[in-house]
Image (cartoon, rainbow, N blue to C red):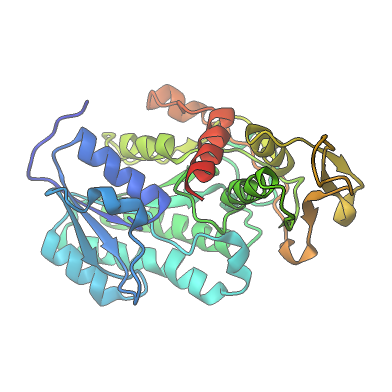
Length: 355
């Protein structure tokens, strides 16, 4: 356990999201710092991931928006944080083709707004910006390490790549402790329902309940299920971010599980954990995951569990992401604690209990 001075302050953007809420959990448990969770003003609050923190005297929500430089400037000037952890983003890769300008405004220009406020008001503040393996895009080699060139294949990846460059510029121009980690896919029970992993586990729960009641159900529809990803649990990554932020020199590291799995594998494991077994049939857009026939069931007509819908294909796909986090494991003494199998199990169990 890290016990630290009472007086230090941390701003976490994106605190209602998966990474932000786990980061708040970690810092409230392992430090005595004051945590300021930045939230956007909206007509309806979505505090589900931080409900358990709202009565903690060391946790406060503050209003701000990465698209509004004045709000960021005001927060940094008033709070004078020792750490600024930027985990807010337009983080859904698929949507970035529909809203490319907004994606760049939040994920790239928003980072400049944060850095400018820090430069002006608290130049000793340590800044972290969330980077993504999507910056690497159509990769040159596998597994990828910190030296891999940036080759984004989406507006989201391009925005994160731009942010990486501007973080470096501010670090070198103004001697700021400013870093952008390179994080591979990370999921959890708190993952947004629009992301493919949570979409799978939520629909597995829906289909499981229908089968248990002997009711008809609609299949889960997905896009490219052959893409390979390097998945970890978000809890492991926020711990890695915090270690990264507390090194003597500002250095950027890659965090990954050092394994890769297909979306199809995630689907199979999720259904099996719910006691549902299927068989893959056909190929390409006609590929389907068919429920195995059982006795005493209404399902005898090749009931489809999963089918492909081309509407979910991306204009440019990243087929393989496979990280090499050896530097972080060696120099930061970090490694993930939650395996891929355990990650899927946690997510499926959560949705079976709460859907």
